Image (cartoon, rainbow, N blue to C red; front, side, top):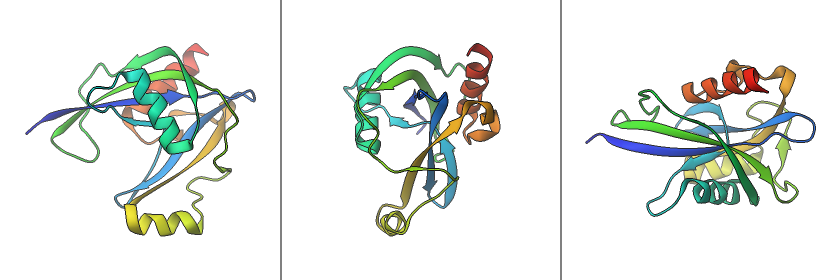
Length: 154
């Protein structure tokens, strides 16, 4: 049965004018996307984003201005019965980032690869310098639109 899948993502730009992305290996495929995830029942979008950053990065964030909400039909990359609605906000870290940050694309360490065997997904984080950022820097169609919007506005 078709369902709506609501996703909430954070755009974090650091003091060096670099954009945070998540490199993920999920269900046998590689993706680069913005940090965030699925809205849970009973949760507001801003609370969802705070929870996702805490779960993924053990990072408290302040959720800022709304950037974009999907305004076209987008089928899920993982489930042919799901329509994706993605909501994007600027976020600001309220503390130092403590998770390892990588310099290279899909730079998973040995411990992460072992976790993949259990959870069937792994992720790592890195910053992309603003001048190197393009639509090709991210994998998902809605993320590409957000990159284009950010590059035009900022």
